Length: 328
Ligand SMILES: Nc1ncnc2c1ncn2[C@@H]1O[C@H](COP(=O)(O)OP(=O)(O)O)[C@@H](O)[C@H]1O
Ligand SMILES: [Mg+2]
Image (cartoon, rainbow, N blue to C red; front, top):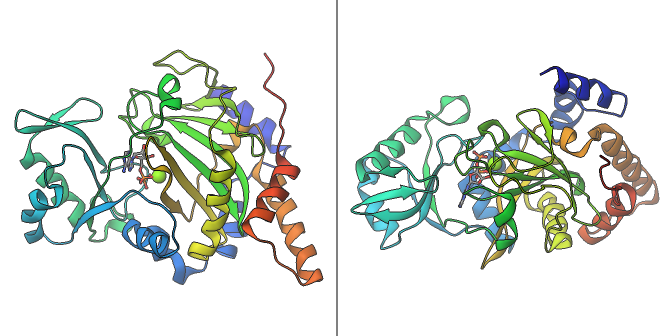
């Protein structure tokens, strides 16, 4: 804990963004209230993405009422793997990643065997709002289970790693790879115990890792180094993230993406209040970068021009990229 505090303090001098500044200067300023449902409800996000031609994990079905739980078998069809999640969930809570069938039951990605009744019960909890923001009634969505690209095999334990990019007015400002661990139960959420690893915006090379608020160099389960890994298709991820501004209209978002073995880059979800730990994994404060982007926006406004997603990516890569490898 002390180590974490020291790191945070050291970062303060380098433009670290705290929760108050994030809320006042970014979330409230750039995110229009009326647009929140687009990102706070994963079913709506999916519909928007599909309309914009952006790839997402295929949705098999939605369950909105207790009565509709009877439809579960029909929705799953003959499939042996799928994911059930609360449409308005956050932080990985309430998500069930089923990887296989086993003797009339199901096996989750972390190896737990569960019955059909247990799944029905989980859906029922989702509907009552157990996992939704503010405890409102929610819907359960059933979707394609992402199978991670082979590249992640050595640095990830079960489940699917995801790539989080913070995007200000369409400009990607900071990126992080999140790796599931034994502790996180196949989910890539830091609060569940996943590892966060910074990523160089220009090259897609991983920087250093943080786990449960400590700085780490190796994955605790696979013991392989988490830094110096080249993420494939990096410019593709950057453009995908940049384009999410046009998709949702919110000016300050965290874009979560995954790399599926067969389907390539997919958008998993968008967040209107992205977390701040990404700064530790990148050893860099967010405000240094958001201020640079805001200055750029001013400049463009004076000149009366706007930039395309490609131009925005080029700008941030030149401005913030090519970070030298971590020492020691
Ligand atoms: N379709 C999926 N296939 C496999 N794993 C998934 C899928 N959807 C979510 N996950 C895992 O669960 C984590 C959280 O999912 P996400 O959709 O981002 O919800 P939350 O809002 O709770 O963070 C992801 O980072 C990923 O590791
Ligand atoms: Mg998420």
